[in-house]
Image (cartoon, rainbow, N blue to C red; front, side, top):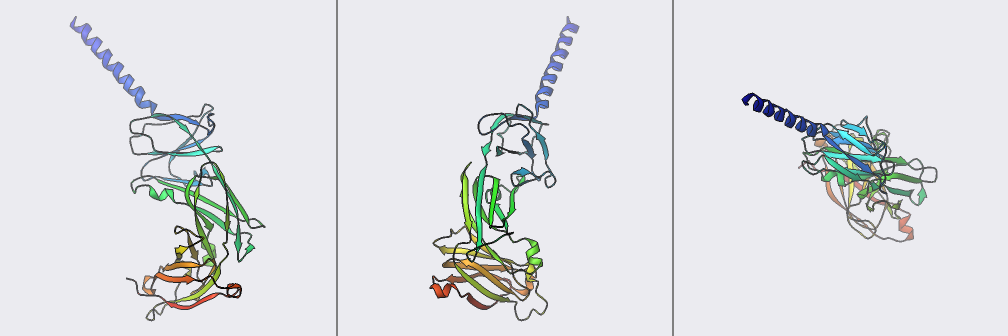
Length: 321
């Protein structure tokens, strides 16, 4: 009798272990549905754990730039990962939509409905004229709100205007973003003196949005000068130069201008609408000085004034505080 009870107990323990093992083997799994409720076939799913990097470029998870585990959904929209105990996110991209999803604790099975992509189109003009081959970017503001301990999830968008100065992004995540002219490293290395406005826009889910870059305004020029005691060459191409909006009727406070600087410290801001701004510039060569919250007021002017740049002259940098 005692031997029989012992065997029953062992069998019960083995059964519990198998059940527990089956539960653990289930891992992180679920079903992904398109915005209209159909299985999202071949959607790419990333398991973004703490200290990992997920890079989404123009609506597609870039596997070369990311260091996360990924998988594709099957014909039923199902996906599966091994068990994961960390505070993770799921990032999903598909031709029909996307999701950035933080599962509830201790929940491994889920159904995820994708949000439809937002389409962003527009035109870029400089001094009223369409500009071809201009790099355009969308900076996603929402990704900055993740905690420092969370996975690094970056939504990146980049394109170039066509011969008519037009651009389009077919797959953009909805939310608060900035859209504008990008200033890539190649412009700085070639000492191109250009500027661009990053317009703050709230993108609705699944809509088409038109954005015109190049609001009519004034041209502002000037030249930056290092502190007198700095005698070395200043590498202005490595500067970070941003012009923040304080008060402007046509631009929100979340919008801003940024600009490159020429080898002699000269800069040129195009299409600055009437309003109050502040200029801030930091150099990699900190001992050369800095410019912080320097006031700039652009008046409405007349038709004749609009044809002439506002010349700020030389602006002396201050010692780093």
